[in-house]
Length: 322
Image 1 (cartoon, rainbow, N blue to C red):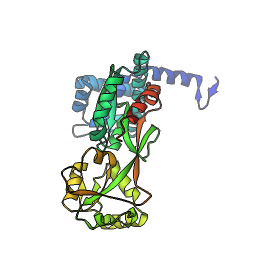
Image 2 (tube, rainbow, N blue to C red; image 1 turned 90 degrees about the vertical axis):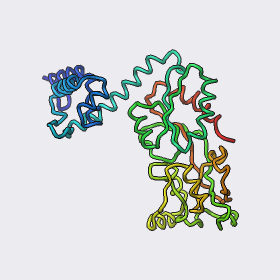
Image 3 (cartoon, rainbow, N blue to C red; image 1 turned 45 degrees about the vertical axis):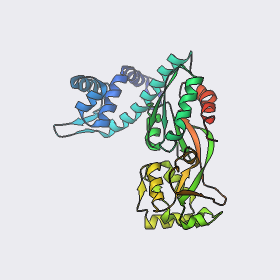
Image 4 (cartoon, rainbow, N blue to C red; image 1 turned 45 degrees about the horizontal axis):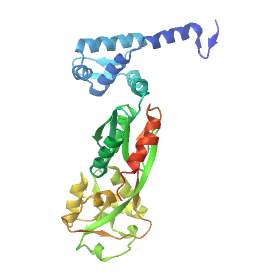
């Protein structure tokens, strides 16, 4: 019998039979168990009874010939091979969703539901324009928007739970595809009585980063702010630690308005009036000016990739504040 690699023809036939017997529904059950580590909650996520979910997991284990889940009265855990299968199942289910979407929307990519993720430091300032222009340009396209931090959006994008995400670069995207839209400056602001406001053309490297307020970890603007500082400034900030971190731009503006420090804010936030009714003042910085790049991120396998690049990206560029 002719061997193929390390598997003979009979072995290949067995593998093909097992692969054919795999059920996307059963893989979904496994992912729900991996997420919740609780059969009752996993069944609720899948909208099935617990016995149906348990049976599906058992059938998947029989098909693969391995134990995927350890379960007793106290705990539920995935076996090492169960963890690996769950990771692969996530990719399989994501690809299957893309396949279905491609088939359903081939006739008109500018129709149906499009799930867009947006980070919190962009959403309040661009969403209004995006939704308005989208409704005018693509009346059959239903935009469902989710606001969350970058890491969560990228994970949901990889898992097929989002179609695209509007975020700020630079950031590690892995295998995801980025369409840069526009560059945005970050503006240094402080209370009008702050000594910084008496300087003009100050280099950012001369700003005391111990007074530079940051958003809490998870916000990419925090990383962009830190990256804009010099290595010496970053070392000083890391050693001393920032005692105050804000959960939103609105909170950070109020902290700065109370005289607790200074902050780098996106230009779009200032243009949207975030500094209105405050005593904050923009401080002119010397070049190089800190900035971030706004980009639309999606999967290379997305069925609407051409529509995203040629139609959606120009629409988003047109929403850039001027």
